[in-house]
Amino acid sequence: MSFDLAARLAARRAEHLYRQRPLLESPQGPQVVVDGQPLLAFCNNDYLGLANHPQVIEAWRAGASRWGVGGGASHLVIGHSAPHHALEEALAELTGRPRALLFTTGYMANLGAVTALVGQGDTVLEDRLNHASLLDAGLLSGARFNRYLHNDASSLAKRLEKATGNTLVVTDGVFSMDGDVADLPALARETRARGAWLMVDDAHGFGPLGAKGAGLVEHFGLGLDDVPVLVGTLGKAFGTAGAFVAGSEDLIESLIQFARPYIYTTSQPPALACATLKSLELLRTEHWRREHLANLIRQFRQGAEQIGLELMDSFTPIQPIMVGDSARAVELSRMLRSRGMMVTAIRPPTVPAGSARLRVTLSAAHSEAQVQLLLSALADCFSELQTGPNHA
Ligand SMILES: *Cc1c(COP(=O)(O)O)cnc(C)c1O
Image (cartoon, rainbow, N blue to C red; front, side):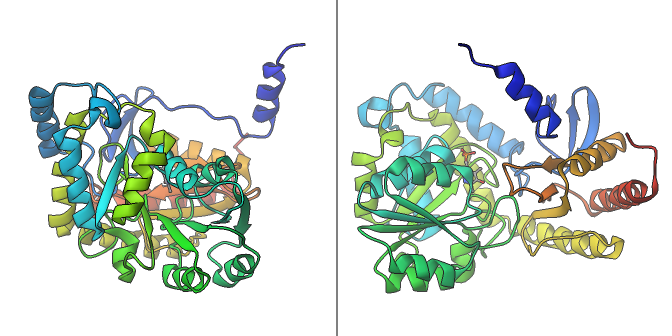
């Protein structure tokens, strides 16, 4: 017996689902170098342009001089340092929650929160299009796991009727591959009516959404009673790395006691927390970043509609163009690349079968002229693909 990995890999290739990692040879930004080629990129999640910001870099440097490099131990041993603590307090303030707890990644924050809150005999209900980390967390928890129709409060209500034990309803805030937003007021209403808890992972909402960048809960004005468990990640609009869960005193203390992905891992480097404190300040105070980004989103949507592209129902920086067929999506991405544009093709199983797409993301670091260049390239590629016989 042996693992027939070669056959699995060949099958993946045959289905046009084979993944390759582009090699980035520059910092994040609109202009990147990938595999030796200079490109204009529309595919990172650095929505506010903070990943390579001089003040954030300086805060990181100063943090490393003061605190060294490694976290050194887990938070419960001797790895919980003053910058981590200060960042937690700042994140609690940003979210308007009593407390926040820092995790090393968003994936771990989601595994930690869900598995600490529900287990055997409980129920976890998730949106069908939730991020993989939330779905994995639900399965790992051992609770009864069920998915409701995408962003559909009445589908959720039906499942809530049959739920047993402690029941956790889990949703993305901004859906990461579609760019639409969860109908949080309706989901919160159904969830509260059944005495269940709502957990929102707003990885893509923090930064671009809300008057001070506090994401979709700020956008809708929802407090702790509506959304008792709020997750944010720091690798997207914050431009750094890590994640947090915000909520009540009891929630955070419970995570410290019971969330295994919190307990059994080394804390993030303290200098990273120093960098995030700076990016948090920029995210809150530099409103022009959100305003410029909103203008670019409008410009892109108008231009794309004129070309006749199929956009999705999104007012966020995630602006996917629906293609459908995986091979076609990959071909379009390749054609864009030959015109100096980098836009990733997203295929199953990341998205449902038959819904491959080009995932365009916009950032406050882009200019109007760069968005115009993208629109022109898209117009060329889509018309060439429709008429041109000369693609293999
Ligand atoms: C990116 C993402 C995560 C994972 O966060 P990392 O910090 O990158 O591990 C979790 N949830 C959603 C919705 C995401 O988009």
